Amino acid sequence: MIEIRGCSKAFGTLMAVSKVSLEIGEREVFGLVGSNGAGKSTLLRMIAGILKPDEGEIKIDDMAVFDNEKAKEQVFYISDDCYFPTNYTALDMATFYQLHYPKFEKQRFVKLMNQFQLDERRKVGSFSKGMKKQLMVLLGISAGTKYLLCDETFDGLDPVVRQGVKSLLAAEIMSRDFTPVLASHNLRELEDICDHVGLLHKGGMLLSKDLEDMKFYIHKVQCVLTDRKQEEELKKELDILKIDHQGSLVLFTARGTRSEIMAKIQEKNPLFSEVLPLTLEEIFISETEVAGYEIQNIFF
Ligand SMILES: Nc1ncnc2c1ncn2[C@@H]1O[C@H](COP(=O)(O)OP(=O)(O)OP(=O)(O)O)[C@@H](O)[C@H]1O
Image (cartoon, rainbow, N blue to C red):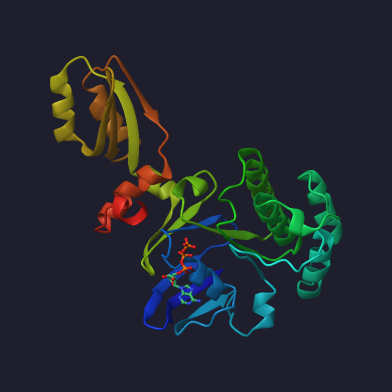
């Protein structure tokens, strides 16, 4: 488990991370979201033991991480602007990481490169941005660390590769003790991948919640009502966050369990009604409102 207790980091007078406390459980995909400059990279670099917090502590499996090789061996960090030595091939990168990570599996790396149709003998300098990101994920998986920290790694991957990487992470979680932490400024990049989401805003942790728990108390329903009056009644009877119209269809996003909301709608004998899946952005509308913020002020 990763435990962060009252962690802060300033650069001069700028508070990049402020008194963040957070627990990242095991064998779950943790999404760290926040707008540009929210402090995600700074927090990840502290978790990786690269930056020392000004105050507070970070423990990886009960070990303080800063200046602790044993703890750092458990963490592979993929920066948002990875450095590759000139003339290094992908295989050279694997040899390099093998020196730092005792559990690195080179054969597995070569196999994964083939699976993702990347040439391990090619110079990394000639890889596209997305290929470099894939390469880093494959190096991270092959390193055999318990934690994989990805900074904006999913952003910009094409849908097929993204799906491949997502399946790879899921398979790792199933087969060994593995926890990926994915940071992104883009809610859409993380919505079908994460089990748990932490929201950073201006250096502070606004919320950290299980996605399934959040989904339990907010639902989106589309229905066709027989009378306009019924919509007005439902506005009073439901805890509505948003209403949209598409022709005769009314779309309600409301707080409450699925059965509570559907019971109220069924009382009106609608011509049609169904529950729709929610996006992460829609889920956050409710959660950030409870925390006293408007999602538009956080992400847009
Ligand atoms: N080395 C540094 N020196 C000075 N200021 C820094 C440094 N690193 C980060 N900052 C500042 O700290 C704040 C948080 O930056 P950070 O990179 O952690 O944000 P982020 O959430 O990762 O942003 P993005 O999504 O744009 O990558 C920003 O205001 C940034 O300018």
